[in-house]
Each structure stands twice: as structure tokens, then as C-alpha cells.
Length: 278
Image (cartoon, rainbow, N blue to C red):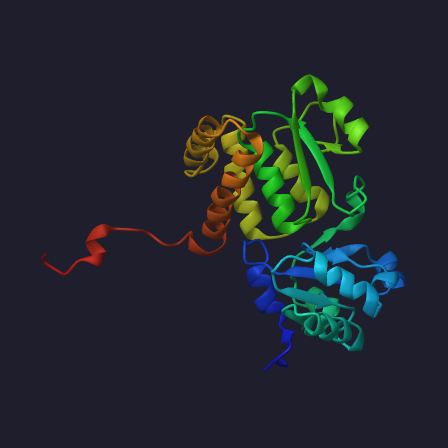
């Protein structure tokens, strides 16, 4: 049984990638993070000067009403103390039982934080791509917000202006030709992000096949490709505002991810819900 103010790695792993995921704060010492830049998926690293009572009080004001999980190296005093102070400030805060060491030992997902090179003054990653998104340009933001940086900022601009906006705003361009975060061979931008961030999850691999097939006119890759394409094109015609479309698309990819993770073996037959012989 975990302590009342702790969460197990297995329980946290079930929440990652879903809208119910907590805010994860990485409070490991800087020396440890420099040795291993990998972070628990969606974790936000806090510098040493952000761990004082005064700084934590300011942080508590900034955090939304989501639950918080604090992770240190092994789940000892460092994470327990920060979680306790955040509870004092009125937040629902737990520490990760066993810390990052237990998370890694359990084979749970981490990502390479060194890839996030474009950030604003609030430490949010910045991204820019072409306007009027269809598939990859919604799938990639979903992946980033659910597994990398929940606070990420996405800008949609005219195709001809992506490069200039990226330079002016310090944002990372994605899903356009000639940039790092884009298609490679027969792989789409979603594939590139999974590989470069080091996200090793069978459910994401399954979802990536569906995204790739829908985004590259290869519906034969998986039966679900045609459905994703149809839903994506429908969203693009329902919303004239790209950011509104992104918010709607988040729910779409949440559903495809949960199917990929939990429901691929389930079938539906309306007769199974009725009485025999009815």
C-alpha cells in the first residue's frame, strides 16, 4: 500500500496520455538531470531556486486546478517536502513513490528533454506550422501536450510565413519541408516526434501507424486509417479557427489513443446486449 500522500508508478503511468493526467514536477538535483536529461513523460523540471517556500507559494498560484505529482530521484525527502508544501498551499499534491529510479525500473515512458530547444520566458515549448491543419498538424500537438509539454504553445500561420514566424518568435517549425520536425521517407511528422523524443509505448506505435496511413494516403496500413482521415477532414470543415479545431482534435486523438492502449481486442455487436431470442 502506498502512503496516503503518494502515488505509485503504475497508477501514474495509467494516467499519462489522458486528459486526467496530473501535472508532474521533476525536482531532482541539477547534477542528476545533467547526467540523465530524460524526464518522466510530461514532467516539468524545476530549478533549485524554485524549491524555496516562497517560490513554491508563487508556483501554487500559477498552477491550474489539476492534481500535482512531485518526482525526485528516489521518492525521499526532496519530493515529499515539495508535495507537502504544495498541499499546504491548497493543491492536491502527491509524491511519486520510488521516484524516477522506480519509474525507470518499471519500464515506464520517459522522453529526451534535450530536444526541446525552443521555449518562451515561461518555459513553454513553442511550435509553428502551416494553417488549416488536417492530420499531422493536429496529431503532433496532441502528442506534445499529452506526453512532452502540456503547456506547449502552437502557432498556425500561412505556409509561406512559417520560417519567418519561427525566427521571429523563437518557435520550432514542424510538418513543413526542410525542417527537423517533419516527414522522413515514408514516415510522417508524428513518427519523427515519437522517435526523436524516445517515446517507447506500444499504444503510440499502434496510433502512429494509423496517423501515417491517414496522413500519407495509405489507408491499407490499418483499418482505422480511413476513419481517422474522415474525422479529421470533417473537423477541418467544422472549424474555421485552427486553435478551436486543435482543441476539438485533442478529444479525437484521446479516443484513438485509449482504443490503441486498452480496447483493440473489444468488438461490438448490438445483439450481445439483448436477451437471447429477443
